[in-house]
Amino acid sequence: MILIKNGNLIDPGRGMNQVADLVIDEGKITQLGKGIPIVIVSAAKQPLVIDATGWAVCPGFIDLHCHLREPGFEEKETIATGTKAAAAGGFVAVCCMANTNPPIDNRAMVEWVKQKAAEEGIVHVFPIGCVTKGRSGKEVCDMAELAEAGVVAFSDDGAPVVSSQVMHRALEYSCALGLPIVDHCEDRRLSNGGVVNEGWVSTKLGLRGIPASAEEMIVARDLALAKLANARIHIAHVSTCGSVELIRRAKEEGILVTAEVTPHHLTLTEERIMGKDWGKGNNVIASGAKQSQYDTNAKVNPPLRTEDDITCLIEGLKNGVLDAIATDHAPHTLADKDCGLEMAAFGISGFETAFGALMGLVHKGEIGLVTLISKLTCEPARIVGKGGELGMLKVGSPANITIFDPDREWVVDSSKFASKGKNTPFDGCKFKGKVMATIVDGEVVYMDDFLGSHYAQISSPLTGED
Ligand SMILES: [Zn+2]
Image 1 (cartoon, protein in one colour):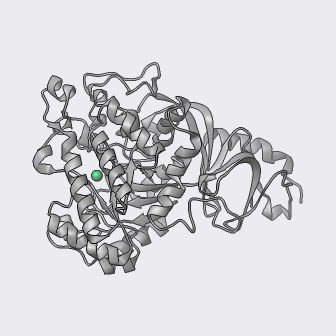
Image 2: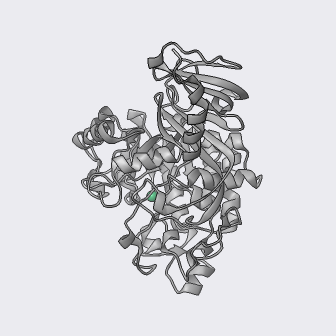
């Protein structure tokens, strides 16, 4: 039994935002209300009392897009380390992409991931199945079999579905199955081995650029195909003004589109790859943070864009064009990143910095706290059809909860990450806003060190009572 006292209970989907207590028993939320007394039934069943005064208590975060790397790339991450990192970031559930080796393109692979997650994972893991066999872009998977096995969406992420004909067929199948296709929108003939955003930074560094239109052309194509098939399309990691505008118009037209944006695209600009300027000043570099000529940890696909793009992305979140925030957690080994910009792997290890980075936007007044929470809870739950069980604080529902201190300051230290991937452009950044505890089905799967010691103090008067 867990009693969370005096927290600010925020449940955007149900319009709740009030200071109250919350009781968890046998994996479920059993009581919500003010002044719930501490009841000790027996010594064996002592309640864990968390004093959440000044903190927020909300539905557990749900990540629509991450790479757990297992099987095939266990040197980068495993389901065990990845879900531990997710818990530390406040996530109670993650949707893992299919670009493993072998890829998740058949029933046996879905079952393998689910089994492994049940044995070694500490948060819910929802597999995403491939769109095409072997992610080759040629032949559509047996999507009905994947759906039966329990995938929540289909994606060849890491790569776009290049053939419009294949995409059209896949959308027709996914429509019949009631699941979305998540597309990584990139015209590879245009991005053509690019490294950074095409703009002044690519010119200055003499690097091949990835233009905004490389993303926007495929977004436009996908929207047209979704309309044709009357199917659901979910646009992964939107990064440009043009994409936001295309999605806005498609939604107005009634096309079944949803979209996500990452914390790094909301907070960092293309300049960050030069090893300075943390992007829009949302984050402060703590003293002693490492500076260098360039930083491969800021190399990500789609690339970090411009201040104007950030303005559009934030506006898109606020007006509902962008439905959710997803980390695109992409852990890599040191060797994958410890090389020149052209050779370095794309991706950011994002679970453990997502919330801190996003709270910078709240503290700067760019986005409201309740809106931010909705983009991490009820909105992603709705997109993957988990709205009935996740993303809300409701008596009787499974206790999947994130507790955070909106004002706690901390400095990112990647060497302390639970993730194997230490590849973050936020290393050394000072954030304001920290996850204090993550609860999955009534079990505390992550507790901040401060809360751990605090809890010991609070619970000590109870010790020895019966
Ligand atoms: Zn992608």
